[in-house]
Image (cartoon, rainbow, N blue to C red; front, side, top):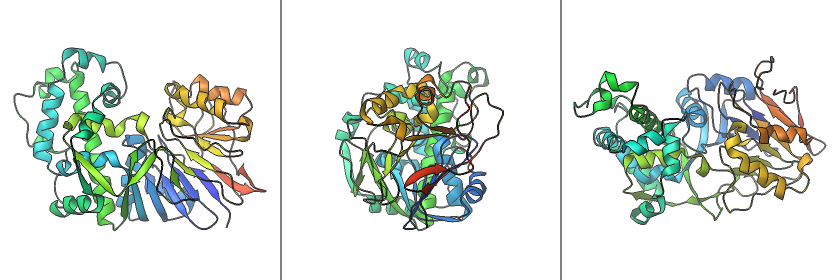
Length: 390
């Protein structure tokens, strides 16, 4: 068996399938479409199972497909999740109290805070960038055994319990002004609330589905000390695996915002094996963490945040630390956006670094899967065209 990597051409976002020569398989993220991803996965990989699913962070275009995978009956042995999700996991399964608290948090945002989040596509992400309280919140925490926390939380909940996305219909209150129709268009806090509710539901669904499907759940905390995973097979670059996880008293809104922040996306590496160079899965990280990035000759690298110029720091780090930049191959997965890729990503192509996209900007070619297989100890594209972004 030869090693292979497939960047699945999902509608939007990242979904990478890895198969190593020893038979180990992993899915790193699943794109935005929950309903469409199972069929896309089977078409692109010709498989109905993986050993490990990794969710790098709680963005819809990375996490929704994982929900679809687990709902569909496709098989998985382990699910690796960000440890930040556990901070208020128990409360997510108490939708009445949690939703009311979330509404209060949103309404407590002052006018300056609300105006600061108006001009952006993802309000919750913008809000997360402004939080400076994470370390303080984690100092006020309860530490629990990870398996006990999940088991206790999920056993107390019922499968037919409604989620956060449905609960506002049942607990509407006249003191919540952004539910009044005349405020919907004009108040960014309503949109922020909707995004936060969706983020909470993704955590609920992935955790519940993984637990009830019998998958082993493993938690990885963003950290300057990288450890855990499967040594020599798939390991974290900017996180450590946690046997005990935290439950803290951060607000509902702060908790949900910090689960989607791009800066703390989990980065993983499939280390070099005897016949195959390494693979670096950057998710939406800008690689600004202090951890060592294991650059190596001939490796495949996923473009951070779909080639967004907001992650330009990642390309600067690559150019300063990678001894032979042109030996790497960069893979970009995305939907159809005019703003992506940015100049830093396109600069790779100008510098003769091989670059491939599932969908190129302003190009007429249809979306493609990016398939790379081993040949003569190198990753080589198979029926895959190079980047044509304009």
